Image (cartoon, rainbow, N blue to C red; front, side, top):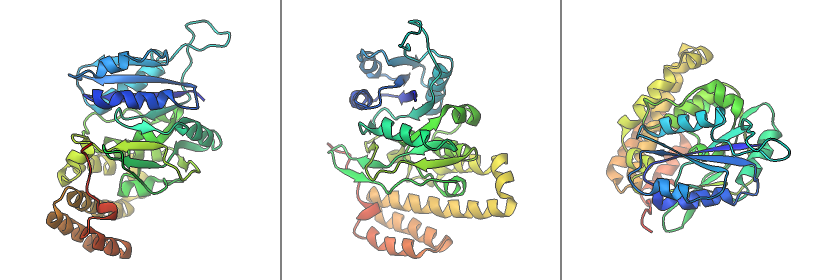
Length: 323
């Protein structure tokens, strides 16, 4: 299985080398990677150009956002421009289409066996549109915090409630699904991945990699979109509206179920805002949002978790973004 890796990159020269090194160390060698430099003003392009492996390409564009960068990378693979030459008796410039895609953020890292395990899982489940692996959050001081095992199966309704994935680095998506689902929405600057996963879930099932170990390490750093915007309830709105105004989703659920899912998504959003406010040190505001979530959609588990917010432990642990 040939894996296409799309890495959108904007002013991340400090982290990009480790990201690319984690791909170079993959035990599954059949991959090609394109770094899409989205108008960086630092040395991001120089770091990418410093990699001499023929499987790595660099594309530069004016700053247009992460969705535009991912779309540019996908297009480069689908027209053959980002593919490394194929060996084994074929012409030196022969290129083939990739079998599957990974959207890896330029400040994250992969475990060495990530591609191998994702590819094996996806190949063993021909009905699935994507394979997903476990991830861990990684502070700049090196501390890691593994997330729960990834979900699988028909994930449309769970995804309507909330984003189930850290980012595209924990997913291996079939090329056919990438083509069918269409482009990333450039009009969404936050939650664009959440919206994309819901369209992907309309196409088929996800399958989880059977390992308890993280395959992706998501870096917690100042300035990242998640850390800077997850405390703002208005940041979630455009993606939520795009999801629930999708006619295909409305047809799948029906109007009554769609309204129920919107209510659940509102409660999940309130919980996420409250959790992130507490993690950023704004405990009073955070607990108010947690209370709004529990009031809107009562849950014994959530009520029990609220107690942890007072000690800022578990899901409420403070961010450690200093090295």
